[in-house]
Image (cartoon, rainbow, N blue to C red; front, side, top):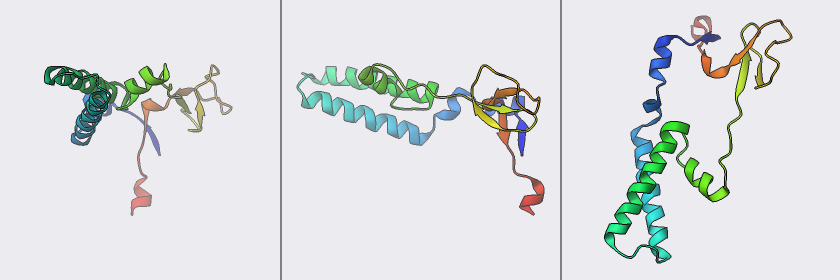
Length: 129
């Protein structure tokens, strides 16, 4: 069943919760790969420039993970010209029907649409027994 998130849930979902050991490994590997590609094309002339490229790319990857939970966010932003925006989903607070974010904030059941990020799914106790 759907339940509204509490303050404790919001504290658990802070920005650093997206950053795990696996994401750190992905960030390091992607940064090393990017520096290798840059060096292959002859842009890195010495070791110091390679370290600078690594730090900048690693920082951008980490920012993408922390802010958008997407390590390739900044790469897609610079390569494609714009990052793909995420579509926000709203949920009705009475019938719990989900829709893409719209200007109409009133559901057919007379409930109000709220952002899905304010809700969490909790298994019913009867189903677990």
